[in-house]
Image (tube, rainbow, N blue to C red):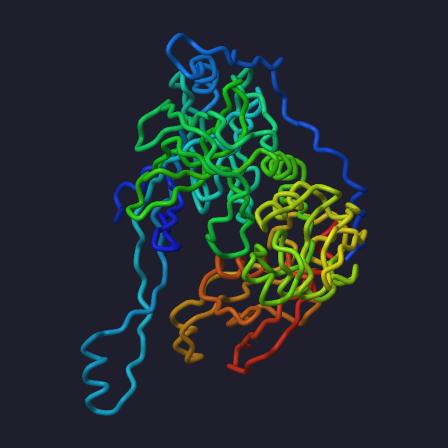
Length: 500
């Protein structure tokens, strides 16, 4: 929920988090997914009405009808993180000085601190009459309470349906009926130079509309991590608080979810970025049905092909996506794709960049068969392959919680830490039938590390668990300590728990 920035070619990419925070500085074999069909809209919407594109006198295009339709379907979201007690490691500066002076190492001390209550704001778009709202993941992530205010000033508490960090999208719901919605348009039909509106609540100013044009498509802005980036770039003014708001075409159709700005200051300086509805529809439909995205994975690493790269590697083509590496066991490896191949089309549709390739794959489901056109040794070739999920199969991935482990946890009491001479870990307070018991975990064990990650809190354990459920290995490699201080390596098999 806090604002993050990343320097990119002399600028900074700022993920928009509303107007910032007040009070803070700034198993069983799964069912295979059938071959995919075009995504249907599973959200209840009224008969769609589109705005008139006719231009008013003296205006290049009439945006008034689109603006009027949009503001009623865009909401204000307030996300609250309650005050919490947490353990941190702190060094005494005097201990550091005198420790060095006398040749003795200084030891970090663990202290309990209370983090203050924090609030952040953002926007959301109502996509069904019965209260489903799409927004950015970074608007709602880690929040304890979500409050939604409609354009007519009605206020509702919202619950989180699902979130997807890879696309920075989340789905929430309020208990209401007959809500105004925006018809969902086809972002792939947008053209560079086309007029669009950005609708949201920037800087805590409700129901704000700005206009601009589409200045680029399938833009990858290098925000890092394992994110899927194929942004619509626009010069419609977007600021903090616009996150999760609507990008709307002149017909009053939703074509994107505003998500980020490129700026050296953290404020708008000319470019905003929106997640296209071509990606959004697949993600929110999966979140509604499964609670987690059924993400298809091709299994390559690489980037945009360039004239310089083509000359250096003698590729014979200057367009498309260059393959720098192929993931072991992936669909790409099984199909015979190799390093130095250049992908130029998916199902006959040209892909000019990694952003376009990511957008094409993000709309598909594991189990989908696709045709990949690529260049190798200056010759064009085509291969058919079946996309897999991150676990390396085509089963439906289930959104499982830690309860499937069959164990309960708490942070280790100070008395136990002192007795065992440890500084971190969580204690197993109970074990019943499940993967933990099968692996040999017992009540009273202290879990110190999971998959090479230090475990200080139950939240750390949950984070490691969630990552493992999406990994092909489907295993928690645990370093635990028993009641007499002996360290015990354990392997917890999750493969029977992540699918249905």
